[in-house]
Length: 89
Image (tube, rainbow, N blue to C red):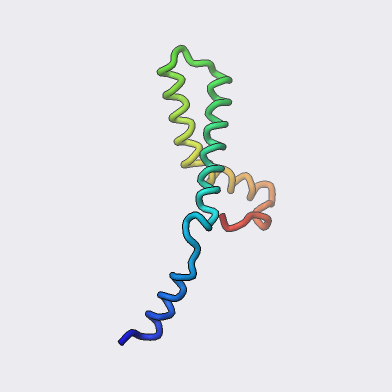
């Protein structure tokens, strides 16, 4: 015999949106696009000597953008007073 709490959890999980119905893929896509764009700007500003150096700079820029992009964006939004206008994602 199942408890009512177990039934409540199961019903809420069955009504939960799937990964394709949520905004998570779109947020991740926006982060990737932003970090790639930032890396390309960095590459154009300080031209690398060869392909290997360019690839390394691009990879470092993308990873750095994915890791620190959200934090930097939130700090900028706080400084500009825009935190009240941001969504949860």
